[in-house]
Image (cartoon, rainbow, N blue to C red; front, side, top):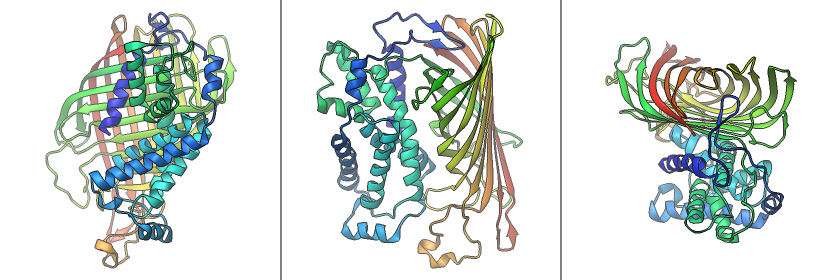
Length: 514
């Protein structure tokens, strides 16, 4: 995970510095600070980069799996990497089951690995949908052949689907960094940065010789679309709401990237528009990575175009990750309040419909926003009871509703944003409370999704930005997190109650809009 965070930080710096052949004055296009005017892709670059190389993409997928297995087996000496023909046959005989790895492993690290499989195809001329098949193939190869642990149901879903979302974001980010017209130190810096952001594309450029080939065109597949980057840094305080358990204070950083035209009249190219948000925090007892959100447009159509108001309707892919840990120093647990962690949530496989709209009555103030309704095929959400190995969450499916409203005054001199995200997750099949766990290995249930439960998670946030000087803003905001779980089971004549946890966060930051 730390490697991924380093890559994203580098990406933001690279995005701010990548365009070098046009004016760098900040532009303002409907509540967005655009790094530079958009540049259309060159037809020669598009033709070259759309050439498909199936065997090279397959070899890169296979080679990555073999290299990762060799590292796990001979360097880390992980028990799961000691494979044989017997373990492979047993994997096929037994079939898939749900694993008990950390939420961060299953909901973030595995999708990132999936992004590498995905980019083996994407970097060799395949489109979004076709590259997803390489992610499926790479994940299936690893699950069935490369581990002595039984293949994982959740991994075969989260790795390719979440990998496509992360992979396309990294592919388009690396596309902005590359410039085949550059030479010398600038060229070296760009190639190294692009490799770190997208290793598969960097490797493909080395194999094909494009990494050092000087051309009259940039070598970018998508040219330069409208791109904006915001970097915020400051302090954050967290406290449990309705519970007197103290608070935690520390440093926090937020990175927000918006790529493409969110109001394009009609589009069919996946992720020609996406937004990416990541939150990092340095706070005792709290995880370094607290939030990741990706919203990528798959297709859209303009449904309303008036003088002051316009709206589009489309289909979007979502990737959401929220993580927290205990705030209280008192870890006492009870039957009615057993969990001191407020929330954990990951939705690596989510897609739905969404509407984007904007209202601009005059040049002094504007309003824009969105509403999304999504189906969640796979989610992991914190549980108060189930514990096995590293797992403290239930698997399930459900839906989410997202809405946001932003008001900006005098070309973003002052802006106010309010947003809400609601998730409802149903456990597919909870463990049988009457089952004799002593009959299973280590006395634990096998191949279940966790507790039989219905859970909701809601995140309400509000934020105000005030421009201090040119692109520098003072940002103040508040977040309300609520997780509510109803357990549908009885054990030892005790009916498990409904558990609710609430957390509030307050932050004060400086924001630079590139």
